[in-house]
Image (cartoon, rainbow, N blue to C red; front, top):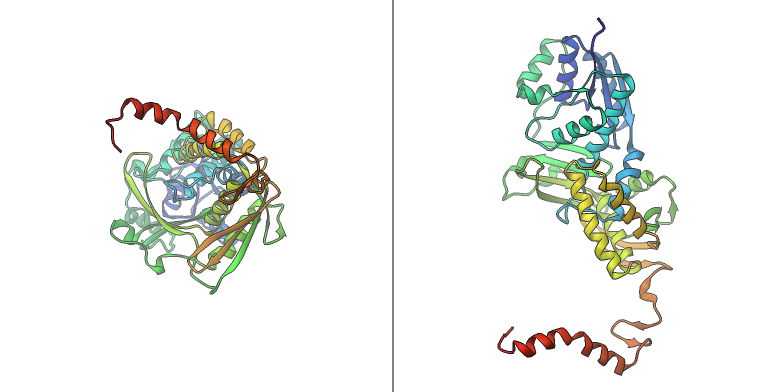
Amino acid sequence: MANKKVVVAFSGGLDTSYTVMKLAKDGYDVYAACANTGGFSPAQLQKNEENAYKLGAKQYVTLDVTHEYYEKSLKYMIFGNVLRNNCYPISVSSERIFQAMAIARYANEIGADAIAHGSTGAGNDQIRFDMTFLVMAPGVEIITLTRDKALSRKEEVDFLNANGFTADFAKLKYSYNVGIWGTSICGGELLDPTQGLPEEAYLKHVAKDGEELLKITFEKGEIVAVNGEAFADKVAAIQRIEEIGSAYAIGRDCNVGDTIIGIKGRVGFEAAAPKLIIEAHRLLEKSTLSKWQQYWKDQVANWYGMFLHESQYLEPVMPDIEAMLTSSQRNVNGTAILKLRPMGFETVGVDSADDLTKSKLGEYGEMQHGWTADEAKGFIKVLSTPLRVYYGIHNDEKR
């Protein structure tokens, strides 16, 4: 009988390296698949391929889904100005969903009997991978050696070394997840809730002094230019903004959030591009959207981000929310201007033909043109009616 086919979601780290070698030793035909959502350099991908074959993989493939990730997720997170807890750009959470989807599609294409990943039983990623596989690759076995055997790092390293594979799997003080929508940082001082991360924990440091303006131009909510340079490729535009902002070490913060399994988690991050793009986009929306467009968009965007984090991307309501977010962007056109400086930035203004502050009916705090003084007094009196009714009856209540 032919060996069973197993697709291993391969990142090149310790857990997935162990998984590839152990399953190959156990008689599986191992197909190592690295789903790239923008976090791997060409050199890293080349190293992954070399190591996968050394570990015993029958086949290695890189599945580049960076642009799919933008079109099906990042675009809507920008439309919604999505920040978890008003802080964290949902980077790793959303990336994992698209990595899992790519792995599931690949497993179906090659007729795999099983899919394996290296998640432990203590985090969110096990849920994101398993749920996606259960829905998109029904009937395909899910193998999680690290989780099921409660393996220690030492056990995995010893197994690899005993079978002739050596690599630098030293336990580092910090662990990093690098992606196009930011870098998350775990471990170290973050394990102590009274401490923040020191300078050396960050991958990007201040490389520029002084101040400079950053101008991001949007059409229907999507980036089309950065400092006047046109970008048809939205991923390239994000990368350009990251290059500019990271030189000032912009976008650092820590977030304490609730994991899907119910415990609290603390993570540091550096995310220059997401922070700059979201604040520029939000600034432009303040001038181009109506009051109630902003209000309702915020409500559904909050749910969109929550569902992404909670591994509910495949929930049927998600395209409905995306349709509303897309519709809200029809007049979000123009340029948002930010002023950058080391470790921070401020919003400056917008230049947009759809700027609602340009109305000829009046200038806020200055002069009205669309109504008379008497009409204003009448409006205010009518507006006060419910309060005058209430306190006229309950005149003993004091505020």
